[in-house]
Image 1 (tube, rainbow, N blue to C red):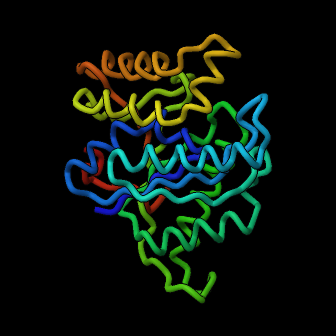
Image 2 (image 1 turned 180 degrees about the vertical axis):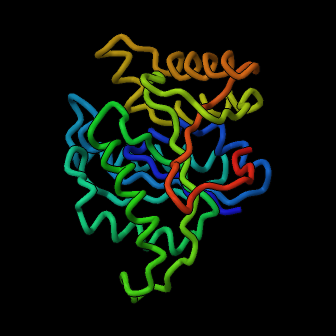
Length: 234
């Protein structure tokens, strides 16, 4: 299978679903990790241009740990809107190129507007990618694929419908998150947050819910024709 995971910032997929992506890669599936925003405002000291370059390198390093392709759409933080035609058009072209069997992205009511807007943009683009006369310079992708919404930050207001056992991949998940040193160090120094422990604790909680050591939770997009009887998650 081809799996497209679309997060907002360069570390969002690592936080929300990297254990699942690692499991999918071990099964031999092709994984593309896309971050829509460039993360240029995710630090109190490092200036945006420098930070965006740092975070792009961090994202590539994290994806390389599992052999995933990494793509950035380079939208500045806090400037993303689902009505932004450039972002939606780039997502349409990406979906047509990857031809995913399913997509993972943010829950529609995650904790910040950038995440919410990415969720909306993915929903829009994944339908529009199937319309032949939308951006006719690239061939339409005939499938309107299932979408799985990954966990919100700290699991707030999110009750999973499906779980993935990531016990085998928890160390990989932590290693992928640890690639994002600009965020890990900043959160520790400025907010007194051990974010790697935060990520491990959230995964342990989902594991407790689902009867394994570590887990990740997902909800399905329940819009026609995206439902399926198949088990697509590992």
